[in-house]
Image 1 (tube, one colour):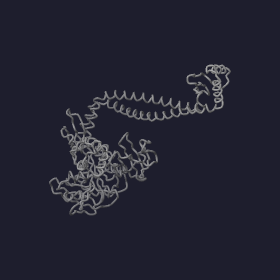
Image 2: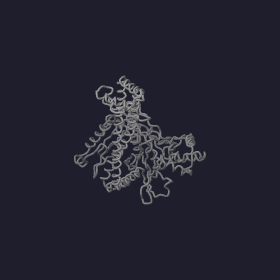
Image 3: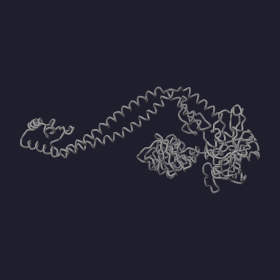
Amino acid sequence: MALRKYLRNAWVAGIDQFEFERIVTISFRTKTGVLKLVVELFGEGNLILTNEQNVIIQALAFKKMRDRDILHNVVLELPPSSGKNPFKVTQTELEEALKNAGETEVVRSIARFLGVGGVYAEEILLRANVDKTKHCNALTSEEVRVIYETLKTLLAAISGGNLEAAIVLGEDGELLDVVPIKLERYEDFKTQGYPIFNQALDEFYLRVTVAERAVNHLEVDKIKKEAERLRRIVAEQEKSIHEDEAKAERDKLIGDTIYAHFNELQTFQEQLLKANQQGYEWNTIITTVMAAKKTGKPPAAYVESFDGKNLALNLGMDSFHFSFNLRDSLFDNANRYYEHGKRAKEKSQGALFALQDSKRKLAKIERELAEAEELKSLKPAEIIETLSKRKVEMENRKWYEKFRWFLTSDCFLVVAGKDTVSNEVLVKKYAKQEDAVFHAEITGAPFVVVKAEGKPISEQALREAGDFAVSYSRAWRENAGSADVYWVKVDQLSKSGPSGESVPHGAFFVVGKRNWMRNVPLRVAVGIIVGDETSFVGGPVDAVKAKTKAYIIILPGDTMGKDLLKHILKSLMRKLSREQREKAGKTSIEQVREFVPYTKGTINLKIT
């Protein structure tokens, strides 16, 4: 509810990962300014909402920690990095870190310093032909250089988008691991390949879930026993803390009582010691005191018994019963109780930390128990069925469906990237020499590829691709009326500039002549097709017109989010006959969202 309050109708402005840590920041543009949602994917996890200056507004869990605090109106400090970002580390930094690691095994140092984990640390060393158990101080400069180059090669293979996703299987077909690329450490293992890494992850974890459910009845019993053990520990710790706190308070009050009766007790102590010095035995002295006690007059009335071995009176005063050592001064007796109370207080505080830790463990195990009970109530067959359905859906899915795409009015496939990663993948993996690659003349615009598929690309297809490229660029967000766009061939795109400088991920340097299309108007159409199933189409106006008569045209504008999408749906429904509306059935704004750039704009009422 708190997030909804602050982020309702907000626009996602960016998604960033902090260094190589498990921390993702999602930036939102709202009416009141920029807000950031920081997602911490470690420990017990957390969601933290801040303003543009990183001052905390809300959090899923507020807490105080050793190195930082997550509290209202406090500037959010991210936790210290667990290692160096492998994408940014230099060879010199790596060499220095390994040198300082001394006799630590190189595999442990790399895993810890770069934060890549044991599997990929071993893979780097395997490819570099360096013994993973070798001590860091025994590495040569040449070995460090090879390790560094291997690291960069591995990172480039993963981040470049040329993935060879696979599930690694054991001898009996059990699931061992899921990887985005082929790893040499699994060279002798059976693998099951997938075209998309997410598909491999999906199947891996669903099948792991099935396996967990198969043995879940055993796990539930085990978790229940652990939960009971932790509950007993928590109860014992709470009892111990209560007793220590009570003792601390009692000992302090005894010390206060001794001081409250200072003169009375001091005089009584001096009388007893003087009698002993005059030759009276302690038994005789105490007999006299106990006789005087019967009169009910203090201080003799305070005496309950005598400890001859330790030369101490057991007193009962002001509702307290305590020992008073005759060998010690009154100050020493009082201070002894103050010290006892202080130690009991310190003990209770230490036990409180242990209690909090036990409660955290108990909360975690109770969550696991709830999950295990839930898993136990479901049948493995249900998950296998879900997995099978997903697998069929994934197998039937075309490669271009993970991008933004449309078919031109003369049936050429046009595909566009959605972000820097998909831009890179689209051009490097799917664009062929015969294709045309478009890019609007505005920073951050997507690359758009017209697939020739062995045919000459028509002028009509080029025009529609140009419309598509400008309309789904940032020019739309800025409410521009038109923009320039150019197209080139694939071999005109390079990942290095004229002077050899590198080009950012998702961008390319253009070599040679550009084919310009000037002042291309920004507009898209959204249409509805009613048949056996109701579907929606979107893209350039001519492309949509070729598929349906029920369409509307959208221009850049300031109507945003659900308001615009609802208006689009209503306008499309008005384009249908009563019979078609009944056949179309229930529709959702989510069915048209993907066709509207930045989910903002205005309907061109003059045409619709």
